[in-house]
Amino acid sequence: MNKPLTGKVALVTGGSRGLGAATVRLLAEQGADVAFTYVNSEKQAQAVVDDVRNRGAKVVAFKSDQADMSQAPALIDDVVAHFGGLDILVNNAAISAAGTVDDPDADTAALERMHATNYLGVIAVIRAAARVLRADGRIITVSSGLGSRVGVPGSADYAATKAGVKQYTMGVARDLGRRGITANVVEAGLMDAGGMQTKTDPEILKALPGSLSLQRMGHPDEIAAAIAFLASPAASYVTGAVLDAHGGYNA
Image (cartoon, rainbow, N blue to C red):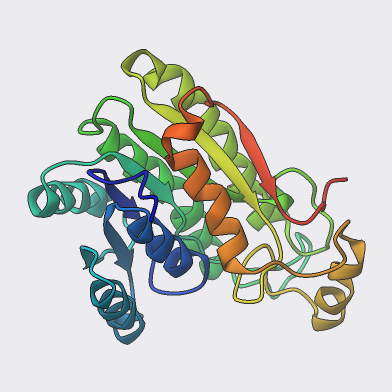
C-alpha cells in the first residue's frame, strides 16, 4: 500500500468526529503519526484512537480548547514531546453559531466563542506550530464555501471567521515559504456529518444541496482526500492556494 506520509507527524485539530476524524484516519492510513485534539467528545476521541491503533498506526488525542488561545503553545509542545517533531498541521476545529445581525435575541456569547474558536484560536495554533514545523512542512486550514460566498441568511459571523482564516493562511504562505513550508486552504462544503452548514433554518439546509453543481451533500472522506493531497509530496509546489471541495457551491 502506498504510504506517502511515512515518517511524518501530523496534528489535526478537532479530530474526534466528522471531517476531523476522517482526516485523522486517512493521514494515518497514508503513514503519518497523528495527533488530534478534542474538547468535550472524550468517548468519540477514544473511539478514533482505538480504530487507528487497531489498523497498526500511531495516534494520540489531546484535550485542548481552541477558544482559549493560551493553550496553543502547550498543545504543540505536547505533540513534539510525544512524536519528536511536527510536519503537518491541519486546522480543522471549528464551531458554528447563527443569527442575523439585526436579531435582538442573538446569542452573543455563542457568537463570541465561535469567533475565538474559528479565528483567533486558529491563529494561535499556527503561530505556535510555526516555531517547530520542520522543513517541507504543511499547513492546511479548513475554511468553508461560506468564506467566499454567503449564500444563506444568519451566517455573517460564521462566514467572517472562515474568510478570516483563509486570508490569514495566505499570509502564512508568504511568511513561511522561505523555509519550504506550504500553507493552503480547503474550502469544505455541506457534509453528511458536519460541514458548511451553520444552525440555519432546516428548510434552507434541505434546499441547499440543490444549489450545488453536484446536487448532493459531500462525505467527510471526500474532503479529507483534498486535505491529504495538500499534505502529500505531490503538493510540494502548491502554496497560498484555495482548493474548493464543496460540490460546486461557487460555480
